[in-house]
Length: 290
Image 1: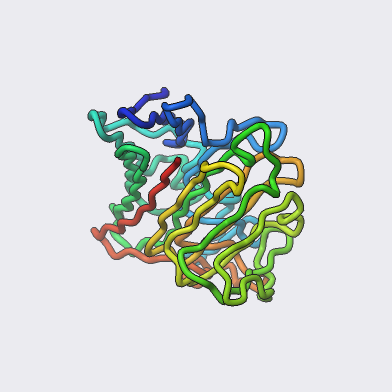
Image 2: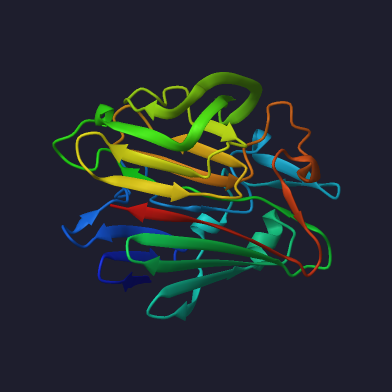
């Protein structure tokens, strides 16, 4: 079920399937900044990654002496959420453990996702509640995709990514979706990445512990831009599916793919978070368009 939320400046649509954002429209010219989800390149638009981010080594993990299998980015993106709040300003969705999820993820949980719209800014909040009688291990992340370019008369090279501050940052290298354990210098006292079609030939750009808490995807030929504010997220992924894919993903993460030498133990997984019995974890990010 798709639900709309709008104000005088922007409009969004959200689906109960995966609690996934379906559109983010600037009403002045009815321009949708969110990727269309064309299956020719990538069928998703802005999936929520839970209870893992990225790929597991051999698509499996071990917990309490038992092996479990889970596909990349977890199961939440493929499940039906319940819309539990629909006000003039916000939509809130809930997902709880089921017999199906307990077969692959042995924890009782509640995941709440809230969308709040204010002028040209969309605030997306995540809340994870441990409803189990044991410590819970999880990761959570965002994966929104935006049209690239945003205008038909532009090319991909008309765009840049601009960080809040100059960065000295290396990208974490990936092979077959897993971290290799190596890094490669990417930013040297610079706040700008010039975008080009082949930038993602060797998979996503993955950064950890950046100084910046804001990244802006902007056109150099128009005033269009997408700004992501991601304070508190230790990882940032940037990805596109192929040279021809007309979208770019800007992804704040609490968690990351397994490293190639991973033990497979969930409690030792790189980037994993833990939550004590009865505790709550809250995080969130914002998307602004203009």
